[in-house]
Length: 117
Image (cartoon, rainbow, N blue to C red; front, side, top):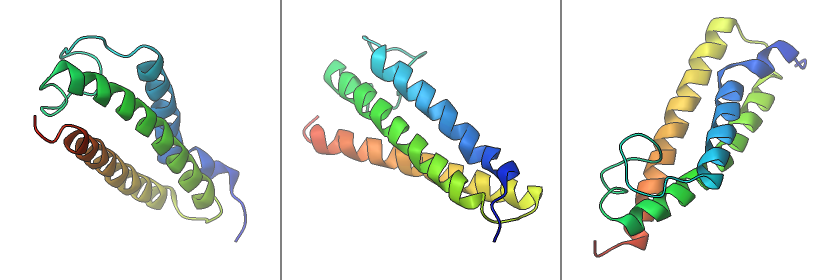
């Protein structure tokens, strides 16, 4: 196995950069009121202002944490010499499962913190 610098910049690494920036912006400038334009917008998060506020902070922190996971995966993956097509497929699969798990984790946290609403 040889370290391959070219594969560091494949899809999960780019997603990591986007997630860290978006998470930081959402954390520093969270949307104050429920809206359909900006923030973590799901049916569960938009049921009340209290849920909305919780979801924005929690989602932004989780996005930044997941950006680290994506970057670590990208770095570890760079040690393998796969084709561009394989990099793309694996990168897309990792991102799809990662984002799916991120939504699951945030929705679960909302249900745990607001069980009677």
